[in-house]
Image (cartoon, rainbow, N blue to C red; front, side, top):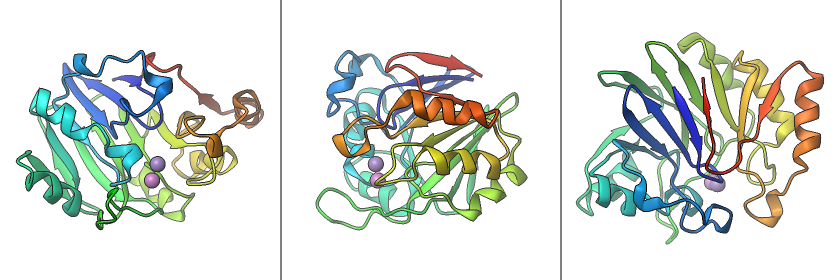
Length: 225
Ligand code: NI
Ligand code: MN
């Protein structure tokens, strides 16, 4: 499983030749100006919630790739009404494909489109392939529900927000890593906007002191798990 960071909370996940893009927000992120969005041909687009910093490039990517949009019922209905193809889930639901499955799990956050339209209940995704499993928490606070995740999958890595203010910060992310029983944390949702600036060295040291690893990928770089 190859994980590429495209800035903010946008990741590409490659599993056996299939590309999943999660929460595409590239064209609106000056820190990701070196990413060529036209080169991305996802087979699937996963959306955790409807906030603009997670859906901005959904239509662009879906148009150029014909990707299947996977999210909650309200978000998928929104895109289906515009002619895109989607598959809707709600909390607890799992959809299986040839090479992997995706389970939609709870996030503690909010979810509305830029025009204020209700965007359904926010969530995260447990992505399981034969070899590896990954949990993408989405925008969320630390929540006790995370203790359910290891019952679903033995995680090889977890993607957690660490920027604080709109989501949990890195200290809570370290606790979340305990809840999900995975010491390898890939951080996201930090440094994109002034309110979520963090000192990345302090955050990484905080994890190291707890015998955990906080991976903060440079935008455009990847990690194989
Ligand atoms: Ni959000
Ligand atoms: Mn966000």
